Image (cartoon, rainbow, N blue to C red; front, side, top):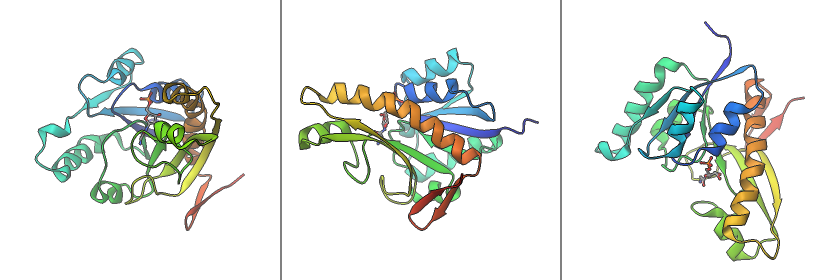
Length: 201
Ligand code: GAR
């Protein structure tokens, strides 16, 4: 049996962050599974090309959020993952799910939290006239984009930036900070102290 730190990545769309994690040079980490809830998501194709096992379940096939989440939990149990990484997963996971994996679910969000939570964060930042934005990796708690922050990446917003150009810049930064956060957690270097995540050297 492999003694690697096993993770599952949840994505609903393009999957550039999924690919960045798989291609990051992290020899102690095994991406055991991609979970996707959207049938036509390009991330499924990326997983096939990268020979990563994938699981597709549509939330539309379930009567309730709890039924959907119960099925996810039972289907991923056998992979024995130590961390679930939400990388562009466009479905809210309820406390039923997150308490099952307490402190084992992290999320990537395209803003400097606590600014611009929820949908279309880069658009919100441009429309607001912010001069800087970025991305955040945080533990998932019962709220939306509210959990303790593990790391953040800063991006400057220029006068010429649009939502699309800002998304590009944020993506580049995300591809750096998300693998780093996973690496830190796999080395047991993130210590929760209330809302703060202290990084052990
Ligand atoms: C990323 O920018 C991520 O921050 C965002 O979805 C994108 C997925 O990109 N997540 C959210 O907006 C969650 N609220 P990708 O599919 O290319 O990795």
